[in-house]
Image 1 (cartoon, rainbow, N blue to C red):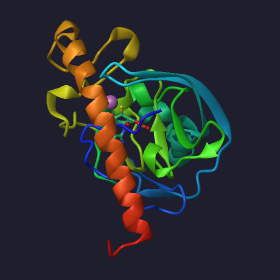
Image 2: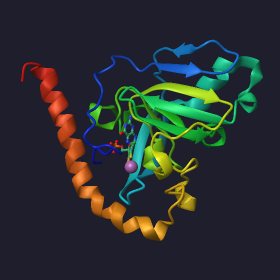
Image 3: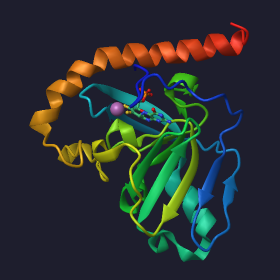
Amino acid sequence: MPRFADDPRRPPPPRRVSPTLRLELPDVSVIEVAELTGRHHLTADFHCVTTWSVRGLTWSGTLLTTVVAEALGSTGLDGLPPFAIAEGSDGYRAVFSTDDVRRDDVLLATHLDGRALDDRHGAPLRLVTPRQYGYKNVKHLATLRFVEDRPRSTLGPKEHLRARVDLEERHARLPNWMLRRPYRALVPITAILAERAAERAASHAENPRR
Ligand SMILES: Nc1nc2c(c(=O)[nH]1)N[C@H]1C(S)=C(S)[C@@H](COP(=O)(O)O)O[C@H]1N2
Ligand SMILES: [Mo]
């Protein structure tokens, strides 16, 4: 699996030691979910909107519905506001219709194919939402916030609110026939730049004076 990103020059953020999540729900004070070390397994294909895919990845972690249900108590998942924002500690964010994250195949992953997530793929915690394109699968997940009003996307029209793979919801405005080829052409250079940014960050962490 390549390291990939919307902005490939952005390095992975400095390592957080343990997988914790800040959950923000209206009428509930902020909840810090400590040590997400669930052992739920999920095997799924991964599809980046730019046309590359990886088949049969096995993610392990905690179901998001489990965490949210525990936080909400008797209110239940039906009472959630209609939209959500997921933020990574590198500043990346994706916006959601709550229906797309309230599913029982949405995982807060700590492991990929039996190994703890590395910096390239979202350590220490990653949102895995297999029915949606890669750009909704937020790496280095730090905060999940449920909100009443539709949030503005930081990715602009490139981000479809739903981004469901089976409906090919790639872009908020442009049709798929216009996108597939230019997107595909960008894949190799994006992957190279993203990989380099990660290597630079790793060597800098080892030898900060370089
Ligand atoms: N925090 C964070 N999450 C992110 C991104 C990012 O740049 N930062 N890029 C997204 C995009 S566009 C894709 S295709 C996948 C790539 O995941 P990978 O690097 O594990 O292959 O992560 C998604 N999640
Ligand atoms: Mo992507």
